[in-house]
Image (cartoon, one colour):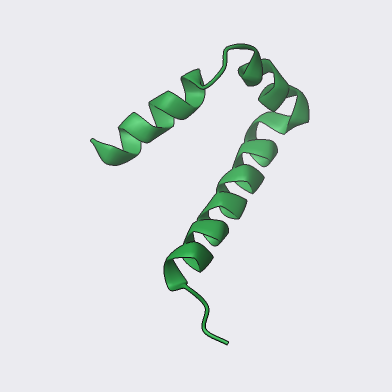
Length: 50
């Protein structure tokens, strides 16, 4: 069975990122950030791709 490496890698990165965010901010912190939707994600993306 051939696994698409891109999808596999993306899955790992996503899992690590979520784990990191939960560890850093806690579940409540994540819900607090969701109140202002995508602001933190936007900042993350701009940081990564600049």
